[in-house]
Length: 313
Image (cartoon, rainbow, N blue to C red; front, side):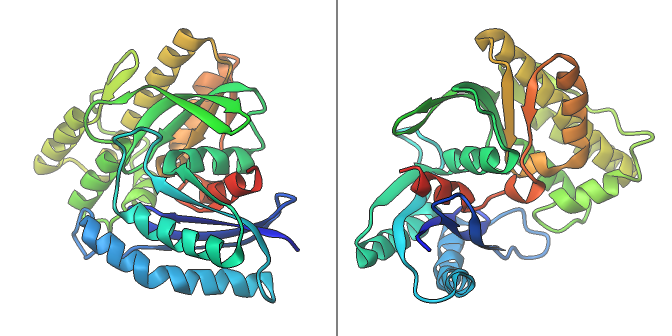
């Protein structure tokens, strides 16, 4: 079988994916980076160290699932966070360098893409759309909260930023409050579990969304104050979810009004949250928009999008 290889070395996940040229996923190996208890992240040097150690192991595991010697036709890797000249992060150099070596050894093309483009491609692959040539994508993760206009082109995707957060990302809000609640980093899955106990009476947090700009720094400060005053942890967790959902809804409404787009793809680890998905689906679905959510596994960081890019080279 002819295969393509995708690699992604993001802030907190090392990922390798092998895909057939027919779009069938053959292997999807990934591992979260280790963060010390009580920590709220890692320095870039620590990310590079962990990616460098783990990437060969994940590659070997993926190759074993493929069975026999690999016959690659292309290799792709995320080389920067977003498709902007000033976008840079050392962690991506690990995967990019490894991918270039593999491509050279197999004498096949190397394709570079942004981490954000990888999210969009993996999301569309998993969700089965959008099929439109022009659509919106919401990218909400630990490092990015942004809405973009995506246009299909022969050479890939043209991604135009429309708006997003002016301070911390949605994932940072969740992680910072989650760590304050005593949850492990990254805090998303455990905060979602805790919030189930507080959904009947969620804490009230401000929603700072104005047009295509939003802020999560104010809601974080408010949540920390509530915790200091003894507010129930479950209620604060539920309030965080509601705040993120309403903020993203405001961002979507403004982008739809600005572009006239009728389809929206939702990607990024934050959008694996069932409550946030449900709230967005209820509100925007009633407005007649076509909504696309990948399986939760393909919402977070992964190399499947890079493999998709290699396949469509």
